[in-house]
Length: 118
Image 1 (tube, rainbow, N blue to C red):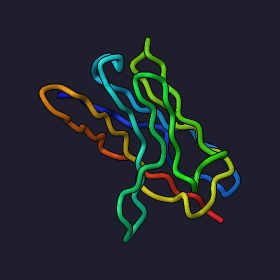
Image 2 (tube, one colour):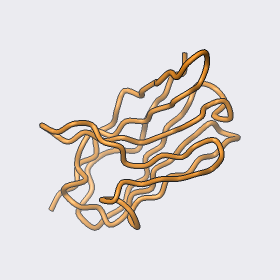
Image 3 (spheres, one colour):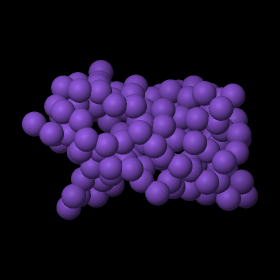
Image 4 (cartoon, rainbow, N blue to C red):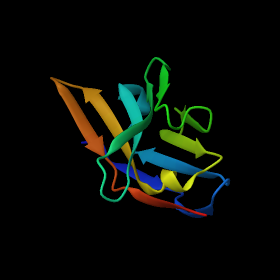
Protein backbone atom coordinates (compact mmCIF):
# COMPACT_ATOMS: atom_id res chain seq x y z
CA UNK A 1 0.00 0.00 0.00
CA UNK A 2 1.53 3.30 -1.12
CA UNK A 3 0.45 6.43 0.70
CA UNK A 4 0.66 9.77 -1.05
CA UNK A 5 0.33 13.20 0.54
CA UNK A 6 0.01 16.36 -1.52
CA UNK A 7 0.93 19.83 -0.33
CA UNK A 8 1.47 23.31 -1.69
CA UNK A 9 -1.92 24.27 -3.09
CA UNK A 10 -3.93 27.36 -2.36
CA UNK A 11 -5.15 30.58 -3.91
CA UNK A 12 -3.03 32.23 -6.58
CA UNK A 13 -3.64 35.06 -9.02
CA UNK A 14 -3.78 34.46 -12.73
CA UNK A 15 -0.31 34.60 -14.20
CA UNK A 16 1.22 33.45 -10.96
CA UNK A 17 3.05 30.29 -9.99
CA UNK A 18 2.73 27.58 -7.40
CA UNK A 19 4.53 24.32 -6.74
CA UNK A 20 2.74 21.19 -5.64
CA UNK A 21 4.56 18.45 -3.79
CA UNK A 22 3.68 14.79 -3.40
CA UNK A 23 5.34 12.75 -0.69
CA UNK A 24 5.34 8.98 -1.18
CA UNK A 25 5.49 6.50 1.68
CA UNK A 26 8.01 4.30 -0.11
CA UNK A 27 10.86 4.62 -2.53
CA UNK A 28 9.68 6.02 -5.83
CA UNK A 29 12.28 3.82 -7.50
CA UNK A 30 9.74 1.04 -7.06
CA UNK A 31 6.89 3.06 -8.57
CA UNK A 32 6.48 2.62 -12.32
CA UNK A 33 4.60 5.84 -13.00
CA UNK A 34 3.91 8.96 -10.95
CA UNK A 35 1.35 11.43 -12.17
CA UNK A 36 -0.59 14.55 -11.37
CA UNK A 37 -4.28 14.74 -12.17
CA UNK A 38 -6.83 17.46 -11.62
CA UNK A 39 -10.57 17.67 -11.34
CA UNK A 40 -12.48 20.89 -11.92
CA UNK A 41 -16.00 21.33 -10.55
CA UNK A 42 -18.47 19.41 -12.66
CA UNK A 43 -15.76 17.84 -14.80
CA UNK A 44 -14.02 14.51 -14.94
CA UNK A 45 -10.60 13.98 -13.48
CA UNK A 46 -7.92 14.49 -16.11
CA UNK A 47 -4.23 13.74 -16.44
CA UNK A 48 -2.03 16.81 -16.14
CA UNK A 49 1.49 15.37 -16.16
CA UNK A 50 3.28 12.07 -15.66
CA UNK A 51 6.81 10.78 -15.18
CA UNK A 52 7.82 7.15 -15.30
CA UNK A 53 10.68 5.28 -13.70
CA UNK A 54 12.76 5.68 -16.84
CA UNK A 55 12.38 9.45 -16.73
CA UNK A 56 9.91 9.75 -19.60
CA UNK A 57 7.64 12.75 -19.10
CA UNK A 58 4.31 13.63 -20.60
CA UNK A 59 1.94 16.58 -20.31
CA UNK A 60 -1.60 17.42 -21.21
CA UNK A 61 -1.68 19.81 -24.16
CA UNK A 62 -3.39 22.43 -22.01
CA UNK A 63 -0.38 22.72 -19.67
CA UNK A 64 2.58 22.19 -22.00
CA UNK A 65 5.12 24.95 -21.64
CA UNK A 66 3.59 26.11 -18.36
CA UNK A 67 3.85 23.13 -16.00
CA UNK A 68 6.89 21.04 -15.12
CA UNK A 69 6.85 17.68 -13.38
CA UNK A 70 9.95 16.48 -11.59
CA UNK A 71 10.98 14.06 -8.92
CA UNK A 72 13.54 13.73 -6.17
CA UNK A 73 14.32 10.06 -5.76
CA UNK A 74 16.32 10.59 -2.57
CA UNK A 75 13.35 12.25 -0.87
CA UNK A 76 10.61 10.12 -2.43
CA UNK A 77 8.99 13.30 -3.70
CA UNK A 78 7.32 14.30 -6.93
CA UNK A 79 6.67 17.93 -7.78
CA UNK A 80 4.49 19.90 -10.14
CA UNK A 81 5.72 23.41 -10.84
CA UNK A 82 2.86 25.41 -12.29
CA UNK A 83 3.49 28.77 -13.94
CA UNK A 84 1.48 31.26 -15.98
CA UNK A 85 -1.58 29.98 -14.21
CA UNK A 86 -5.01 30.54 -15.70
CA UNK A 87 -8.44 30.46 -14.05
CA UNK A 88 -9.15 27.24 -15.96
CA UNK A 89 -6.32 25.57 -14.03
CA UNK A 90 -8.52 25.75 -10.94
CA UNK A 91 -9.38 22.40 -9.44
CA UNK A 92 -8.42 19.69 -7.01
CA UNK A 93 -5.03 18.26 -7.88
CA UNK A 94 -4.27 14.64 -7.12
CA UNK A 95 -1.02 12.72 -7.04
CA UNK A 96 -1.18 9.17 -8.35
CA UNK A 97 1.23 6.25 -8.22
CA UNK A 98 0.99 3.25 -10.51
CA UNK A 99 2.88 0.08 -9.66
CA UNK A 100 3.22 -3.29 -11.34
CA UNK A 101 3.06 -5.91 -8.61
CA UNK A 102 1.18 -9.05 -9.61
CA UNK A 103 -0.84 -6.72 -11.80
CA UNK A 104 -1.19 -2.96 -12.00
CA UNK A 105 -2.22 -1.09 -8.87
CA UNK A 106 -3.11 2.60 -8.60
CA UNK A 107 -2.83 4.71 -5.47
CA UNK A 108 -4.14 8.23 -5.01
CA UNK A 109 -3.44 11.07 -2.66
CA UNK A 110 -6.26 12.90 -0.94
CA UNK A 111 -6.08 15.84 -3.32
CA UNK A 112 -5.30 19.49 -2.82
CA UNK A 113 -7.18 22.55 -3.97
CA UNK A 114 -5.65 25.06 -6.36
CA UNK A 115 -7.71 28.15 -7.10
CA UNK A 116 -6.60 30.65 -9.71
CA UNK A 117 -8.30 34.02 -9.42
CA UNK A 118 -8.68 36.63 -12.12
